[in-house]
Image (cartoon, rainbow, N blue to C red; front, side, top):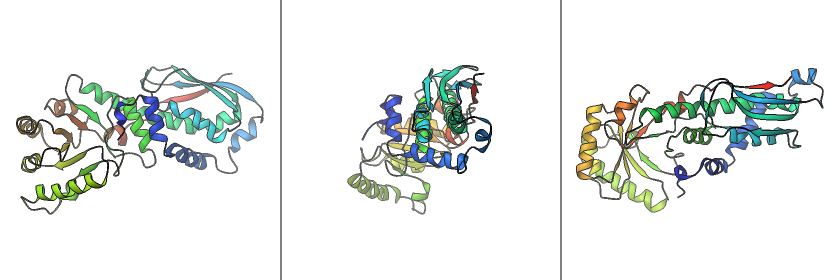
Length: 307
């Protein structure tokens, strides 16, 4: 299976939008913003053939994501190439206040029709990338990598995951279909001693029927952790340590190092910028951060029409 985290950003963007998610999103975005009869304000004051030059400008510092969507945005509603665009920055790059990101030239009505969809998408994705970069920088010097989760905006998952990569984060699974993650709700009701046998049967089944990126099991106690760690070598790839404190995380790392060094440990649960450094210092390999996608603020970007 293709390793998405090894792909350069342009190739990753192509892979993550190959299923048509961006086209569906743009169709929905324009439908909610400019359904019939269209942009009634612009049509009342701007002549049909009036042209202009404009710039997409960053109003604050951050990390860029979403610029790769711009050609598709204009193609969605301007099939006659009414607007040309010149990108002066790239996804994954930092930006500063006042920096010109894109130059536009063409039909003014078309520019104004596209304006809010374009800015919403770039602002949202750049916000995700910018917050991700803060988490990545917070754990610099540790072995831990910052991973995303499925706590994404409905309809925006693949693009938000692309933005995580733009910010330097690592992609976890895309959805329920490409990796197996046995969580507490899957394992609820199992009595002590049943966990290992149940998992061996389930993981054997999933590996025999599907190509998976990884198999991971969530635990919330060191007792569960020891039982899962004792599974046959090669059955699972990772163990998710849910809502464990620093002492528990350190104990889990020590146990893993002594008995099963090939298993990756991922910490999860209420991770913030204030706590992520301490979690990384426990020695875990990965830290899952839902906040990068569910709580990222917009990066302020604007469209300025040249006079």
